[in-house]
Length: 135
Image 1 (cartoon, rainbow, N blue to C red):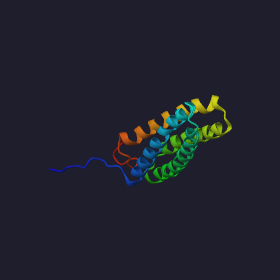
Image 2: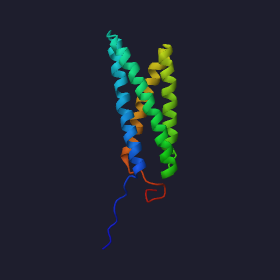
Image 3: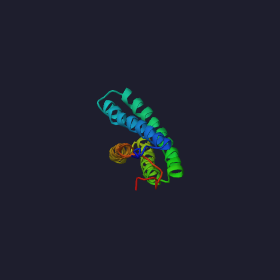
Image 4: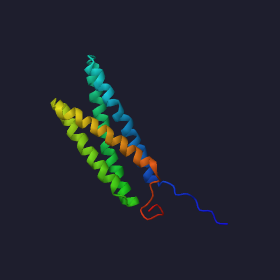
């Protein structure tokens, strides 16, 4: 009797999972830091600023890893969605620096949701090379 091993995530897929997890963890702190600041503790603004730098840096790292997923696993969707999220984060970053809160706040909510959706997506099924038994 021949047993077939279940499909397993490729190493490049694990890299994407790790970076997407760090991205989700980092972005989850942003509303908390903003809330600290808005409640009157001005130290929250420096935490929010440092968090924005961290989230943005991890986002750009995720773009690089998503390119590797596209090249190695022939999966373009993680690159396309990551690029869209990082573009929104970049606009949101500069809106925050400019004090354009009418854009910064709703875009912030949107990017948090988008990063959490990406996190769920990369963990819900194995990340295999396209055509390697998962389609």
